[in-house]
Amino acid sequence: MTENEVFEELKKIIADNFEIDPAQVTRESNIVTDLDLDSIDAIDMVAELQKKVGCRLSAEDFKSVKTVGDIVKVVADRI
Image 1 (spheres, rainbow, N blue to C red):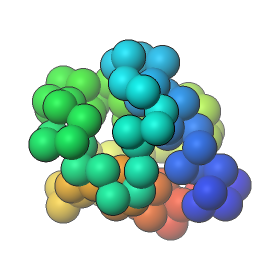
Image 2: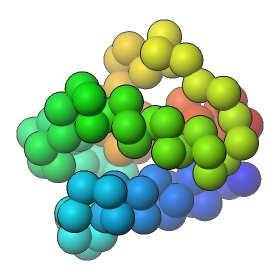
Image 3: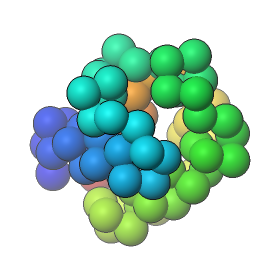
Image 4: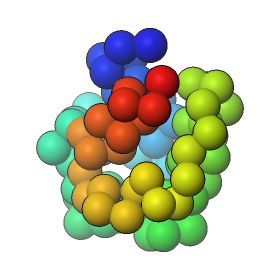
């Protein structure tokens, strides 16, 4: 799965699960300030993403994540 495919999958998850307009979701979108997601939302998002990409992700992987692009990079590196 490419970084673009991971991004598109993540954008769909965010739009579907958190009722956010997909046009608002860019790689530069800050998870907290731009998308208004809290830590519980982030956990739910990662759990859903794990199902889609078939890869186990740990909380440690996401310690420094701030943007959608950061998540994409972490996931793409694990696949």
